[in-house]
Image (cartoon, rainbow, N blue to C red; front, side, top):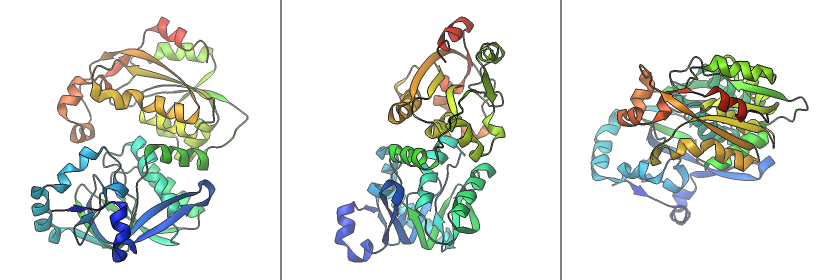
Length: 344
């Protein structure tokens, strides 16, 4: 069986403890662990398992704990030991990882902040192959600014891999990742903009009567923004300088982590019906509460989507897609929306 060791057990094992490096971010007085050694992991969970079949849930968990239960079953252990001789192996690599579905929220808040604790001056960096060029460029630019050269990106597919003499930084709780992004990248602007984030090119959660909304927003001097057309550096500039932001629920709203205190957020949300949707329902409200942003929301009527993109079908259960209004388009009542934005 795979054996999980907590921090106390790591400290008792001198050889194992020596493989955990400590890195810090002086500006925020934050310290993290980085495991350096030989390990295997899959590119969905990025949950390292050492050659001795040790794992460290306390250090590398970034999902709900139940998501890791399968690692500690006899079936997994037997299959893992049978197959690991066939795992592709990389040497001298730092595994940052990224969302296998290229989810912007997950890439920005869960995976990216850990890169600020890397101090080696020339590195091989492992991320998922589906990461956007925009995300790769941002990583490269930030590391270049810090005087760190990426010798090569190592692109992972949906599979298990082995790494030798390699490193993987611990994962943070969401609030720590949000704090890092806000404190390090937020810019203080005196010029303030009102922005609306369009999802016109998305597969779902498009506002089907968006033209009606834009007419009202232009009367209030809103700029219409398509974040797909902006680099991540440009997105930081836009959100840092925003006074008011109106958007349907969207991973692009993760950029509110770059907003200054007091920014007004107006989220157009689907009518949620199920407990499993609470993560979607509360996601941006929690960020607003944490960063002292003013949060407002309005419910929209769900409109069925003809087809869902293949990437969503691959990672989301078909029953969830069918039941949840999160995967539908939205219709916003014009009069209700006009009242919704009256104080923007």
